[in-house]
Image (cartoon, rainbow, N blue to C red; front, side):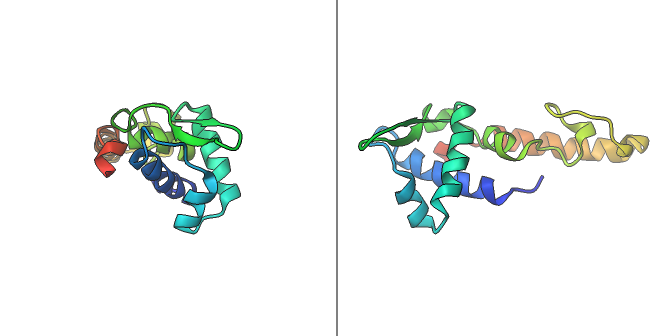
Length: 133
């Protein structure tokens, strides 16, 4: 697993949304300028997260973005899966994106990669936005 720039920006934005949880909605422009990221790119990222139910938005002058759930209920694994796909290093050890792969021909190597996938998934599934605050 390698995080894309999209996921890195998403985590910065989600950190801001978590820190602001329960307050006014955040504007894309404010988050983008704070971290020096393109506002249009951040908008695309937040729209993906909205479709996945991780964030919600409101249009208009008083609009903006907020988390859909409490920061304690949003884990990092879900965000990565939405934006970057599987947590597994190869698809043949992925839970949600399984496909056969050549690595299956070496069972001990596949088992090692499965152990890595399992630890990575466990760690990211048990680390929430609240833990970032």
